[in-house]
Each structure stands twice: as C-alpha cells, then as structure tokens.
Length: 135
Image (cartoon, rainbow, N blue to C red; front, side, top):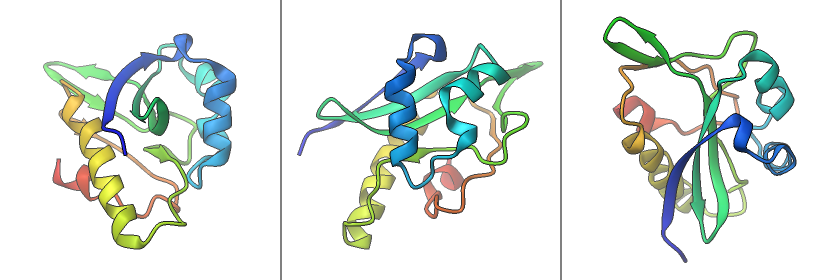
C-alpha cells in the first residue's frame, strides 16, 4: 500500500474525462460535481486531490472567497451538494473505511494553507466528515 499525497489543481488544468469518470464512479458523485457544471458556475474553481499509488482517491472542488482578512470555502452557488468525493470504499470493513477517510480528509485539510471557514452541504453518502469538524 502506497503513501497518499495531496495537490491542488486549477479546474481548467484538469482532464474533464478523468474528472467526470471519477465523479460518476463515486457514491458521493452528483450532477453538481461534474466538470462542465462546475466550470459553468465558476471558471476559477480549483480542486484538492488526494492520490495513492498514482490514482485519485479523494477530490474536492472548491473556490476561495476573500472577505477582509478571512478566507473561506463556501458551498458553490446552485449546488445542492458539495464537499469531498472519494472512491467507493463499501467493500472494505467499516474500520478500514474510516481509517482511509481520516487519512485522506486529514491530508486535504492540513494542506490548505488558508481557510478560516468551510461551508459544506455534503451528499448523504458522505457519512464520515469528522476531520472537517475537528478542523
């Protein structure tokens, strides 16, 4: 098992086919996460991407709004669901699922340099978000 890594990528630099295939295969995937929908809403969106062994494991599209000295990641307008989208872990035992999500979400959160507030309305299938709560 490889070590997970994190990087940020601008939406316009992401391969739309790879992005959409990942979203469609994920239990948290929805219309609101598809490349074309995100780009139509905000051309300046970015994504936090967690990889393991060269494969995407978790992605999270976002925009950063700046208010005074504060930086916050809002729910994108006209989206019912936001937040992390990750590979299907349902075949793993629950403890292993939670361990992976702790690792991946923790990596995502600790690498965002500026985030004073994160506002999310996640898909119902995103049933473990404690790292966001702790942060």
